[in-house]
Image 1 (cartoon, rainbow, N blue to C red):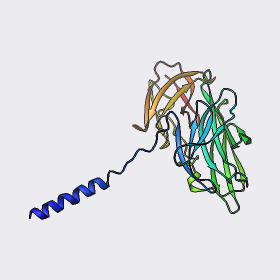
Image 2: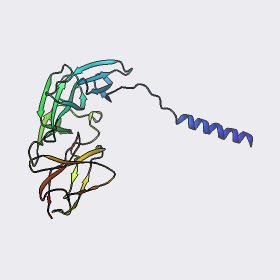
Image 3: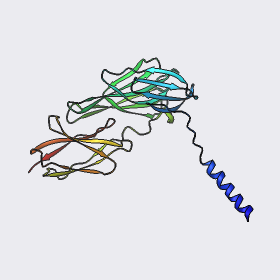
Image 4: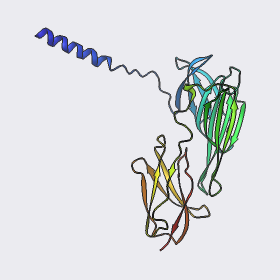
Length: 267
């Protein structure tokens, strides 16, 4: 009996030890990092350094392999680094990648984006002003790059979808973890016209943890901003302090912006 108990305890120890195999290899401080398997160069780490506007790539032992300076429009900040590859955007074996930057108009409260594709020498292969979200789909020959080009300086905001043919095949390890078509979902406020209060339903994309619902005048002047997240699927606003008239509302985050809808306040 004692032998059976000893054997059982030994097995438990082996099981617990086998489940505790987490070994911290390295910490990339102050940057976001990812991992990619390049067809020629093999497995590499890469980081997006917002402060220095750089893409840095590291070997398997975390030593620096390449440092690539990224050109941005004046006053823009790096937001996303995607599709780090060798032969997706053209047929050579140089490192190429896509990156998105943004600027924020604090007066009129809207974002402006820019999408660029560059290679490891820093040469820009494509620049799409207004390009905020991108996705690459496999095609019969090569791939199709979809770039959504937004203009939030006008009301209602506008969007164009630009489709590019590119020679390489997209690899699953180079694909962003969410499709660019997953947008903030806005539904009509109720009641509309509103009296002393109004309820605005919304749905945030899974990767957007927090955003702001903003209320504007028809001239684009920001009146109020409310923090929203995944806790609820609607927000109730007090409108008793607003003058009767027509207002605009939408949800914004650094990465997403919903369509702009109208809210009428009556009495």
